[in-house]
Amino acid sequence: MRYIPWVPSNIDNWSTRHSVLTMAGRTAALINVLDDDPPDPDKVADVLRAYGEPDPIDLTTHDVAGMRAAAALLREVFTAESTDGAAAALNRLLQEHTGPLRLTSHGGSTPWHPHLDDDDNAPWDEWLLASSCIALTVLIWDHQRPPGRICSSPGCRIVFITQGSGPERRYCSRRCATRERVAAHRRSRSAAQSGRPE
Image (cartoon, rainbow, N blue to C red; front, side, top):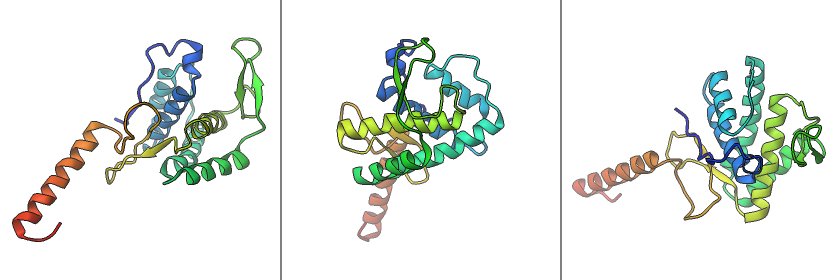
């Protein structure tokens, strides 16, 4: 099962669902679930529901393929090794894949909020790329550091948001962190037993 970042308990509240951190967390969760080969449309829909998207969510294999392509582009922001790299990746995405900034209330059904997609009923892949770019851009602007990263555990492709309280994380989960700590301990012990430097 792919890592799904923390989802606020009051996700049904409009302002919580559209907070920058929640939208960025949704981006990471979608990148992770769309990395499966092939992605399962039901699992993608489950992530969308977890982050407050209303039913019905009817995703076709074509929708999921487009979202997977968008997720691959967004992954570049998470794999950037510096703030400059993350900003450059986002600038490229904004220039090549989004429309002009606009405000919408979805015909009066929601509070006014920004969009970068072409219209309120844009395809899923366009929506994913545009809404993710907004959230990740604001996180860089607000914190002046990359908004997220890929897990430091070799072979783990899970991305996660690093913004928030506490020290900066290197691993997507305690499981990966523990596995790497144990592996480092074993390498150190093996090197000591053989008399070789680590």
